[in-house]
Amino acid sequence: MNAQPILRDPGTGVVLAQAEMTPSEKAARSKLEAAGYSQIKDIKSGPEGITATAVKDGKEVAVIVDSGGRIKELRPKQ
View 1 (cartoon, rainbow, N blue to C red):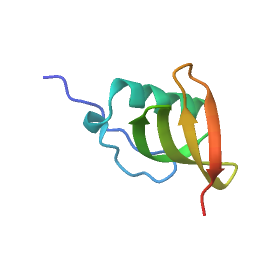
View 2 (tube, rainbow, N blue to C red):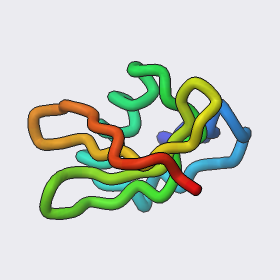
View 3 (cartoon, rainbow, N blue to C red):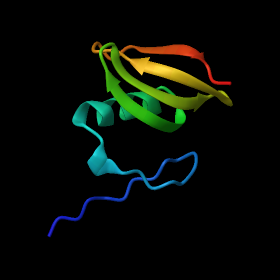
View 4 (cartoon, rainbow, N blue to C red):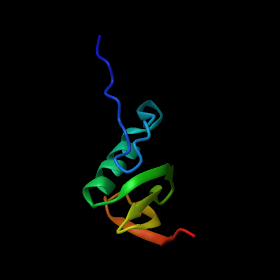
């Protein structure tokens, strides 16, 4: 029996619901983590790419990962 590894957000320790994420959303999470983002949440697919909320340099920001894998910060979260 192949058990799925338990994934935890490195910033919060919260268990992630891996089964609920699409392959594209998983790839976007990995891309964000590699770019130094943590506490990644609210990952959603949309027409412009994968959007999420994450923390970088101590600030919570909204981000989008486009189809080319480019990360863009949309706006600071209030």
